[in-house]
Amino acid sequence: MSADPAITSATRSPLAIIAGGGDFPPRLAEIVTGSGRPLFVAALEGAADPAGFGAADLQSYRLGQLGRLLDELRRRSITELVLIGSLPRPSFAALRPEASTLKYLPHFARAFRGGDDHLLRGVVSFFEGQGFAVHGPADIAPDMTAPIGALGRRMASPEQKALIARGFELLAALSPFDVGQAAILADHRVIAIEAAEGTDAMIRRVADMVASGRLRIAKGDGVLVKAPKDGQDLRVDMPAIGPQTLRNVVAAGLAGIGLRAGRVLVGDAAGLGRLADQSGLFVEGVARDGA
Amino acid sequence: MSADPAITSATRSPLAIIAGGGDFPPRLAEIVTGSGRPLFVAALEGAADPAGFGAADLQSYRLGQLGRLLDELRRRSITELVLIGSLPRPSFAALRPEASTLKYLPHFARAFRGGDDHLLRGVVSFFEGQGFAVHGPADIAPDMTAPIGALGRRMASPEQKALIARGFELLAALSPFDVGQAAILADHRVIAIEAAEGTDAMIRRVADMVASGRLRIAKGDGVLVKAPKDGQDLRVDMPAIGPQTLRNVVAAGLAGIGLRAGRVLVGDAAGLGRLADQSGLFVEGVARDGA
Picture 1 (cartoon, rainbow over the protein chains, first blue to last red):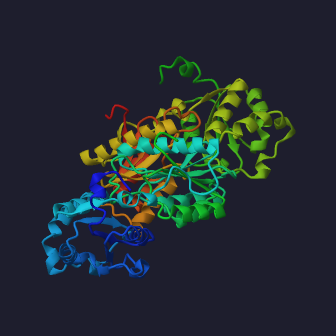
Picture 2: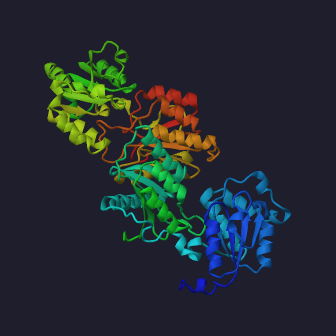
Picture 3: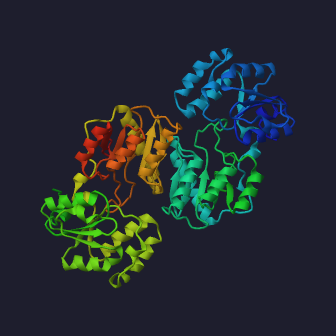
């Protein structure tokens, strides 16, 4: 249990998970429920699958029903929440605001003008402005992030560790430009750098280059590195990997994955470690001091 | 005419162009011939189109005929050469060494082990070791590089200039990692960074994201920046753009291109400027001091 008084004092107060898609929201719900803390799940329609949350106290909301959601949170005396999960580009129907939501639109109109990062910051500032504390999933469930060391049995070799360290240096150099959550290195050089296309598309690009013979990656060579940018708001915008990331890495012929420990979501670290073992990959969390 | 004595003293000595594919080698041949300097073109089979060189004194060589090429250069008392043009992945047949070439193989086997950059450096060091001076195309024909200022009538706006400057800063930050010849910026952020995929593939990636609705680029927004890496050997590995680059940039919905003046090959600057005008793009050379 954390020594942070802000968290320990709140562990019995109710928590709301505002849930998008993917495996992370049900995983977090399971951990919160397991800790005995009262939980309310607000599942975003078109993103979250309500069936994944088992017996959790759950209601579904369209994005346009923000006003109704706020009313419900207040009715339940919930003051703390976590936003987690993927959010596909919402349909116009999902966005269509109810009357109770109209008054909040100017805030989001302003936030939307600045691009994705601004929008996420706008969502956080909106809930904070409404009197809620917004926690990151890592604050509530640190076990959902990459631990220090190997997630499975396989560990990075010294050469692979050196490639990972170089990758983290690259990402740090990109950070002032607000870009570069991930990169792929092989053959002593940088093969791919992620920008707007996202990590999966970047890995597939490398797989395509290998498949077409444009690029050769020797067995045991090739690593994906992933870390947050400096100043990235880890409460709502934490980098993440999952089973599909590992499958993509295998398809690209890479040897493994280096993650910034504690700062990249992995969901179920043990399960991902087993998948890494089955796939012949290493997946390793690396502390900031390189440990 | 250059004030560099090494160049001025040599302008009447014969020059060899070892020519790969594309428009640059014929363009350089035309400029050299126009200057009155004796020229010999060694066209690499499978890459250069001999017909493109008009009446130039030309012979074709497979890569495996390096020994024969060296003999011919010496027979002609040629001591200076330029390597220019694209080189598709050579076939095994093209590489098959003649007897006169076998003795040079260990040099290239060593160079090949270090990846593309090492290979290019290995080619330069090979010719230098054989007593030849290897010039860059920019040394022989500076007009083939991006000039300072707009190539066509359209100029970058102050906002576009700011985006270009940011792009050059990004490329400079990547340079220590021996990556990053080009990037695309739009909407105040970095959209794509080139690594092993090459500039054209990077631009097409952005076009795909725009086409699929994953990315929106407003009219007048969006720039491609291109510059050499620090320490890049501009004699054999100069960044380049051409008509196809402009067509790709149009397809991606970008507003224009910023190039490091004097350090990116454009071939026919006037022709490219006309194409830029027809395409509604700006193409601008920017000096290192940002002028």
